[in-house]
Length: 374
Image 1 (cartoon, rainbow, N blue to C red):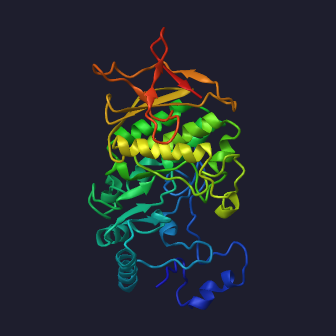
Image 2 (image 1 turned 30 degrees about the horizontal axis):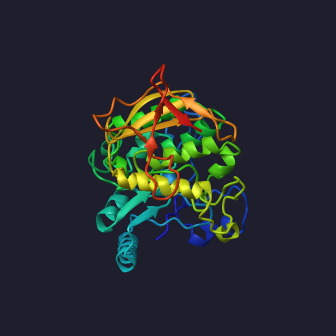
């Protein structure tokens, strides 16, 4: 039931495992799944899906082990059937809305397709890569999948995927060190327009998570403005916003990656708690859960995109308010079209209190660009 890649003819399982059981270093068997190779001029970040890296080994990625965790052999019928039976049982018994599938690219795609077809819930796969073509192929099979004889091109694999290409890029562009929102907008634009993905509304967007630190509050501190901007990006980019537990409590940027939440008091009075309440209200009121998006304009210090068209919601973001003051203003070089008669553009995130109505947005009289308070 376990993959035993590189097992010698006649070798027993005990012999195959002897080195690892002795806790020795650099054991040849079982081989590890992290066979990503070394950087080349074509690709410098070697990880899963980085085929341009010298020595990338797909067989070991799919059949190698995670340290001493036995790697299940999905080619064995009993293994496939039991995994699918268990997954369906869990979803039906506990009425689970959706499933997060860890380490999805270390599992054969033909099994993932069978799993998603059987499970009566959306499966969101973790595919930790910046290679967008590879990333998207875990939602919609690519031409290389078809060429390899895995499945026909365009076949649904998983319903959704955690959006690592976008989410990995965001912290550095909003909070440093790179601070260039043009780059982030290019990634977003490619995802929205390339046709690589089967369902853009099921891409999971996040500013941080349990595996890759630090928390976004620590990354952006002490700039409350930058912090708020990347969280706004997370809440309003097309896809599913995913907020790591405790973010609404971490008002000083000091919370550890896996700290216990109860140590922080469950406050519902912080500016961040209010921010998420306001952002969620805007998403519901303007039906942004599953609506189109378009990148309108971007520069090193700003980014503007829309949801639900030019007369829907405009999202203005900046990374150039570094201090922790409350009287900062950024002048965007773009503005929405003139509203219909009797209407006005409202600032959805500038509310005076619970139940209050949005206030009118302010525009520069000379340039017409939006004036955004920090």
